Image (tube, rainbow, N blue to C red; front, side, top):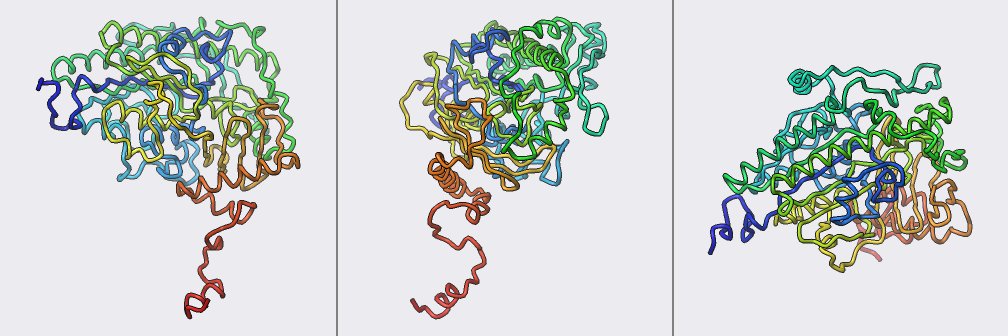
Length: 519
């Protein structure tokens, strides 16, 4: 038996180091899928991610489990749906939810670390408030908060070492809040060269960690799992001149859903539009804002290109699986909204997802998959048991081109951001159902209305289809243990129940039968 083939302490039995893939994840935040050339963008340029897609598997129906940073990232690193891991909101807008993963929660980096992997994270963590990436087995500098911490000591040292100017912005773009005050910063011109940006700095630190892990491979044969996690293109879009002016506003076509009038929609959507001050900005300002967003996307793509070239130069391309995705999308004016929030449109729930595994044929897949499926995929690539990732399914069979049975719907959830609110969604090929307990439900025919402008929840022509999806969602939630289903049992016709939906246990007839044994 060769040395490589021998089972090693801390490694999965029967899996050699040479069989265990290194894993690199490129991650963005609030990244619209329609900005990527490989997903159809004809103006915004993303040549490096396009090349990754051309050499790997591009998933056309890739969704986030929830369109909010902290819960989505927690699902990535636990393989658990948000309702299960219970980290339901970003710290910045938390209204009383848990702020850190429970101590007993299983996590991917801890599992990989325990099985001989070097685990590194460079960049945004945002999975809880007090426990950092290092607390879960990552080699990681802690970058607090939801966006680039440009006052971070290590970044300030980086600027000083290279003689770069400090962070400074001009040309701030804002709307006006309903109360007349200036609204959130949406974009600004960064008065630094590209080499001084936080994104360039993160790419440098990622390449440094890759280089260090190569040395470890040479010394100990330990494989690595490395996440390069960028805060962009999350708003505010703060980029240097080159990217701020890269795309001309005249080339921007506003999304059709700016025609949104919020008729028959949950009122929270119109409130959210006012909060993000969309109507307080001119059409020209909205076009410029989208153009700057595109520039931000291209800037990040170029930094990803640097990382991928370093992977090649270090001789790792043939032994390293590479994945790309984002925690969720962004509105950027769609439905007269910005950011993300209590509106389960595809703009923020459908994202890009690319996986390249050495030896696997490039392809496009259309199965419904989610960000949290990466958890089981990484375990599979490491030769480990995928069962601890309880709500995750390995995508490796799909990447290998296998013909496997797959779910024809995806379930997503939301628990609040800015405005506390609970939602559940069942998304199929043609129809999408959204249950909003505090308001009206939504039902969209994506074939006739891809921009989700017409809520057809009360359309008598679709009653049977809608009710079938309500019953389907109910059964799915019940099967997975999501107690949201209890609310549905009293409100909708979801079929015959095999339990007492009041949960009282004190129904007179039931009590008498139990007490006397009478039929």
